[in-house]
Length: 147
Image (cartoon, rainbow, N blue to C red; front, side, top):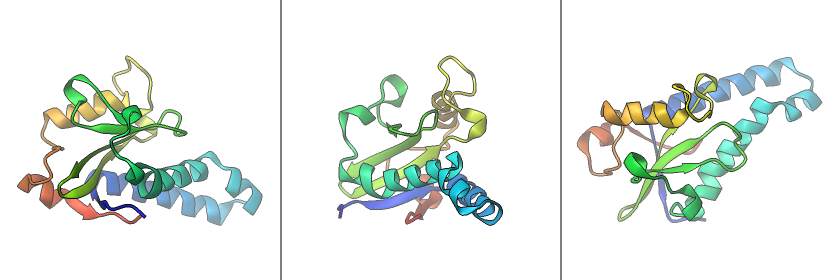
């Protein structure tokens, strides 16, 4: 068990809800074997495990670090192919805030205007996200995250 309180930005919650809806529809329409092996189902399981187990073990792992204008943020990509989870964290208070997970329209492709890193940067520039856990605007965007 980790010692981090898990929170999520409303955009992250919306994307996870959309993914859950897709999984429910697949569950209702596919035979069990096809459902288990469907890429969307696997992606949902990987994201769930990453956010609830892997990242909270150590949100400051070197492989999560970003650079330049994103240096205050972290990203998880292991096993997610062209998907990325963006987050920030604090040790005081011990909190991880899941900010962004890209969708099918923003798959990772370096140099592409729809690349998830470029999309995340745009959102930062417009004030959609903050790394400051005490930011009052950020506080109003946060939801408990338990998936």
